[in-house]
Amino acid sequence: MTLQLITIMDKIWLDNDLDLAMTPYKVLGTGCKQGQMEFVDDATTLARMQYQESVFHCLYKQDTVEKGLREKVRAEVKKQKGREDPEEVEERLEGMRKVFARSCAGYCVINYVLGLGDRHPDNIMINFKRGNFLHIDFGHFLGVVKRKFGYTRENDPFVFTPELSYFINGGKLNRKTKKKELAKLKKQEEDGRRQTSNYRTMTELEETDAESVFYEEYDNEGIPEEFKTQNFKEFERCGCLAYNNIRKEGIRLINLFLIMLSAGMPELKSEQNLNFLVNRLKLKMS
Image 1 (cartoon, one colour):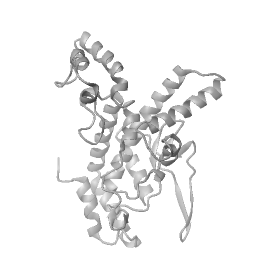
Image 2: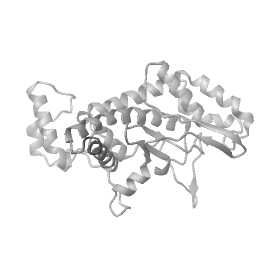
Image 3: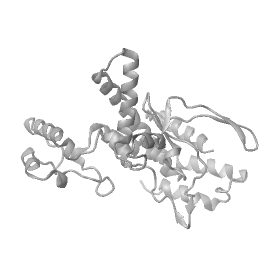
Image 4: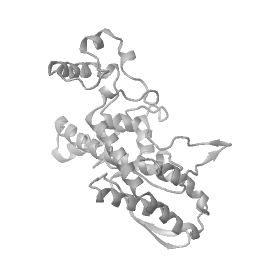
């Protein structure tokens, strides 16, 4: 049912000229607890990338996705051309970054509205040739999440980790990228453009310790507006448009759930189970 809902939501977006590069793979039930599933090629799980790119296979870094996809692209370019081509790698990676940002925005909205549970790295995949981001294995929805030893394993409204943010934004803004950002801000200053009222001049940045200027963690104040790349802003724009388009069709989604009440799904037994969906759609807001 979740995959059918994803397909419907994707159609709603496409009808509103919003292509989020979704991957609603097909599933066909052939019997009780039996069926066939479409194979999603050229994709790997986030867990696999974490295992390959992490330190000692246990210490995860924010550049895991960036490094993993960059290596995949580098190997593909070398295989096709028979030599290294850094410019081609960067060009392809930027194209993947755009696709990744749009698809990630779509699945963030789906994750939030449907309240998908069990969203661990093995249930998140990334296409390493085109950059599509996707979720798989939808065993829990409407806010029903797994618990272990009495503790709720999932508390966030949707999955958007620092690894995903890092790749979309094109890197983390810290001491390592300070020189690049100073050059960027210098050009803006020379052109007479200031992106926000919180804009810092080049001189101010040079005189301030990098660690106090550039954020270290995404879960505190988030990425400062003036340092967001165009790609990250596009991710935010797509997410907002996608959510509002779904809200406009909120009654339609609720009716689809009502039709499935008689199916006997453990997480959809009565109309009370739909309160979660109604609350997430915020239908009373403009």
